[in-house]
Length: 585
Ligand code: AMP
Ligand code: MG
Image (cartoon, protein in one colour):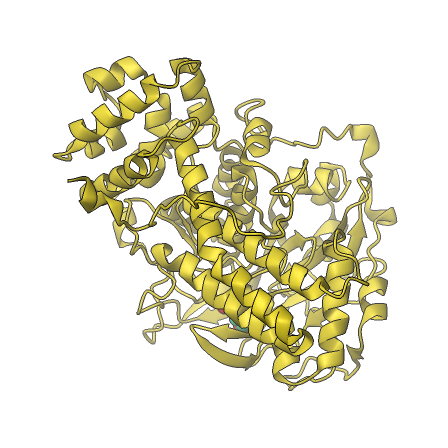
């Protein structure tokens, strides 16, 4: 019987030995865009119902008005040739990294829907009250430029759904500039939905409320889940009509424009390098690579002849880690094109993403993805495809020997990914140390979840909350996901195996196990129906549910009375089954 479970969806094979790779410290210290799940868990466990800040910013340390808030584009403009052609008309751009492009103000009254206190105070050093001002509304919507800002649109390309798509670029995003905060961190501020740029192709440069609510909430939710991600500072909605054919069936509807102010240490993507390599702009390719290494991979010396190989190796490893983290919370990005894969290995460009509910490796969040290319169970392989494309882009600046080495690095990608997945799922099950059959326990459980359509999040969560005694007696009252799982005909076999394994963890108490597991298995994720419900209200200018979701998802590992009342940890409502998300945004 075990054999059936040994070759399974995640092929959970522990790496027998680790390849010689250069790995960035996995989630060092308290880096806001790269921190351990433990950090996020403890940050989100301090209290229950309010917005948490893990920055403990004293109010005296934050700025109370925007007069002194400045950004700078100097570093970026000085580093690269900038396309000086004026105007936001669509064109092919060559020999530059950025185009100057001014945001187009949204029409109609602007309304601040929501802000992230954690970002406003913790990253931008601003008193949260500043976000309620008219000035903030104008700055964060693209109606007025922040002091120091020379807004830029980034030129990049990419492979979309497996094919080279040529020039893409920021078609509806404007990089406002970099902000150096009190912690010495440099953050790039970007508006999304702020109007046309030279890269808008046939688009209108806008983003609608539903996709902006989703991007805002998911960025913040992912952060609090402990997953490397871009951040969202604010969401502003307007009355500007925006036409969208949401399901590409000819049913064009009038929606409303919105703008998210989002932040990342860098917005460079695999596609940023691909376009330069594709068009033979090799000096610029080296220039951009050196810039990225200097700014974001400071452990690599610029005079190291192997620097590009070390850079590549780091991106390969960090991408494997990122995708393993996505899988650990059932996150499917939805559009894993190379233009949506960050070179810093953070989650960017939230579109038709989805958190898997019933466990299903074939879960496809994006209804426009007919072939299921970006189904959840294929993300690791798609990551490999994207990293192959990155290697193609780097090839002109690598020696023959380095190319050979890079291929070996890529060959080890699956091993690194599987090792990380193995570690994570062991932790999700509360397993300490390493035993021969750990893979079997994990894969067996996932297969039972698949067969019984058990909820991915709540099965692991309830397993974290259930006592060993309850488990032994199969007492799953009020534990709906475990009830589902236990309906499997082999559940008793698995349970015996699991409980025996736990019983061998001699210095581990049952309470310790539960505590550990509750810090890694969230109770709340951004389910589609939750985002949908909040969006429907937001479209009527009622932002209370967006705010509520932000609060709750800021503490995903803590049971919260309001969330329970709202049914956020309950079986998803019936109406949620018919919900669909498409690329339209
Ligand atoms: P995405 O799939 O959202 O990552 O977008 C792929 C490309 O299409 C990027 O270059 C975007 O900037 C561009 N794009 C998407 N939507 C729009 C829009 N409404 N207007 C202009 N460009 C867009
Ligand atoms: Mg994108």
